[in-house]
Length: 140
Image 1 (cartoon, rainbow, N blue to C red):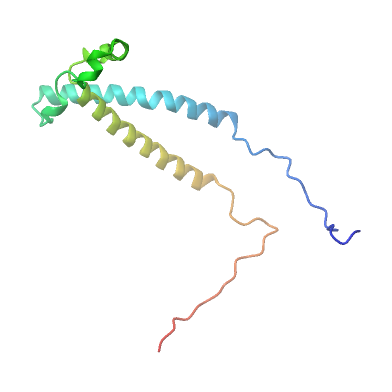
Image 2: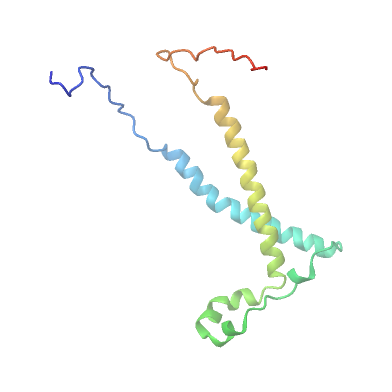
């Protein structure tokens, strides 16, 4: 053995660091499902609120109005013309965004709870147990 080479044989971990394909599929599905459910829930919430006289800010109601330079450009207005026809678009967008954050937070909490329950123990059989150090509080 040379001076700079270790005599300890290092074990290589044959496991790959990639996530399981099922988790990638579930994540991809959630990126599609959560916005769709949020948009539907936001739409229904605003419609229910308008029918039952909820206090929805008037700035969010009505059709969207863009800055003047948007109307002078035909390319931008071609892209934005479908949105211009939607009444109460801003209210739907805000409600949908709130639902997306809410659903994302709930799913994250559920995932954290499940991961905490099924995760392997922190220390394996080859690890040294954590030290039991009792520190006394310094008093003058």
